[in-house]
Length: 251
Image (cartoon, rainbow, N blue to C red; front, side):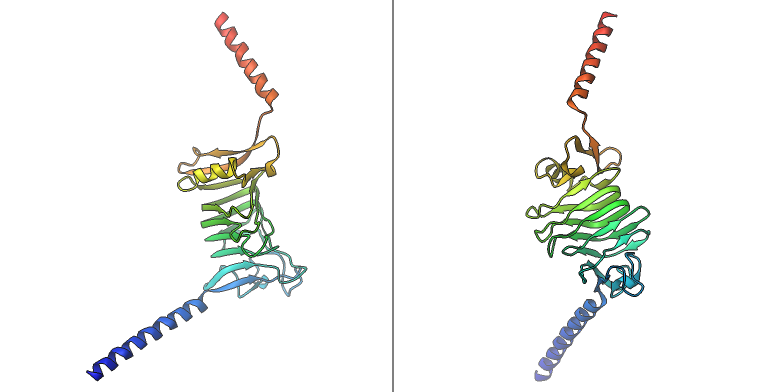
């Protein structure tokens, strides 16, 4: 009986050891990588997201890379520009005062992008190219500001969320567009546009609004900034239609 109990205890210990070893290996296999750039003066450094010299721990797309943390290590830090295609990452965290630019010709795919979690983030700017997220665009996650501006190109994500305490905004201008599935997002998007004003056009400037297109790509909503006609223009259109209708009745 004692031998049987001893064998069972040894078996449990072996199972526990294997579990903790697997946990340790799993942790080490997915180590976070950190943006490391001192005004572009680090050896081989620049602002290119795809340059391994700009990262501590290797590129975010390297096998075994964990989350990509964009944070200011220096008072003269500069932040990444995505200008080439094929860039990938797991989760991306934009730390306090840090920023990210995606420009024409740039493509970045990740699971999630998180702003405003450790402090007020700088701007995530998409002026061209594309940002594709298979999970969340999570804005102001820690209750801090973390704004996103799309003036060109596209952000496409499966889910969008705002921390109501953060005051973060997703702003559209120019030919920029935001795309998400209608399921699980459409009613929230309507609220964020019309009630909480977390989604804006041209920073909420008069004469602009957000267009919600749910027909061009079935199952998805495409957001763009559109000009709102002046009241005088609408009045002239109404008058023209009235005159046209009167002329038709007389004929």
